[in-house]
Amino acid sequence: MARFYHINIRMLVGTVLIVQACVDIQGPAPQPLPTNQVISELQIGSSAAMIEVGDTVQLTVRAVAMDESEIAVDPSMIRWGSSDSSQVYVDSLGRVIGKVQSTIPVTISAAYRHVLTTKFDTVQVYVTENRINATSVRIVVLDSNRVGANPLFGYPRIRTDLYRGDTLVLVGAQIPISATQPVVLIGAPNGGPDGEPVYFVSNDKSRLGKFWITTSVNLYGNEVRDSIEFTGTYPIIAPAIQVVTGQAGGIQPDTLAPDEPIQNVAPCGIVVIFSLAMVPIDIVFSDSTASSVGCDPIAPESLLGFGFPVHGDFIGGNVMTMPPFSVAVRRSNTTGTISYYVRDAITKERLPVSRYYRAIAVE
Image (cartoon, rainbow, N blue to C red; front, side, top):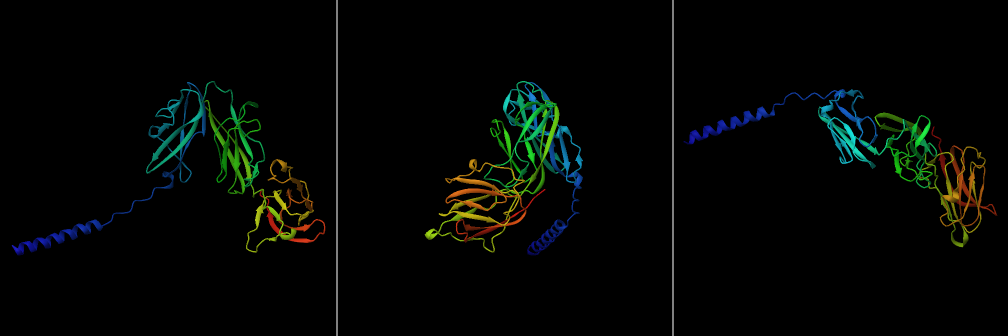
């Protein structure tokens, strides 16, 4: 009995080793999919659709591969959905039906799986009680089409209007728009000159150079688009100069440390000067002979103050003389490094306040 038991143990060990050897054998690694078969993006035809109550519009999708070629889409495999089917219904083939008027857009989504990857896209659908007699959409620039990081003085505004030919039909249509990253578009329902909806163009992450803002809408079954070019610049606000009174009426030192980075600003960038000095002072700029041409006027009294009187908006060519406890704005169209220092306006004695920044143009 003992011998039989011993033999079975050996056989069992051998069997385990055989099974383990089989498990350790690896087959050939699966081949990676070619880039033209890996879906990278799903695109519904437009970013928005406008339909009349009771109307039906057919939405289409496009699948883009990693190599930017187009992948054939099987319409029966698209999964459609509506954020509110009671207002906007979408069937399994992407036909959208406007059931009731919607003042807030309803989101229609599409999902599509190709091989191993699933991608999604959405479209905002507006339902109007009556058809708007428009044939095109236009992006309108209300301010400048140049934008730098500018959190204090506001951002340029744009608006989407609907036209029939050259005739304006609807001001401030609330149609989604998009911009090249990292530019962000911020909707403002009452931000226009007459309280109409607009978008603010925010460039806080300081994109430099040309970029595009685009919009597209399925307008009662017709695909219409528009785009406009913007330029991202350096910030339009330079480091603020703050002159502070020290003991016995003296001026506290404010010298740029050797390891402090040089600040960059766009030409005609705004330099804000806060004088808390008890005596009149001069701000002397290295480009004090710069031309005043090329910088648009602003209304500093509507933007600044902070409890102090606004002394003025100086554009180039100035040694700025400031009364005690005042605020001023200075700009110039100079490019390159600009330095400045402070002196007593009466004795012309140089005071221990000096800094510099760099004005860089982006085209």
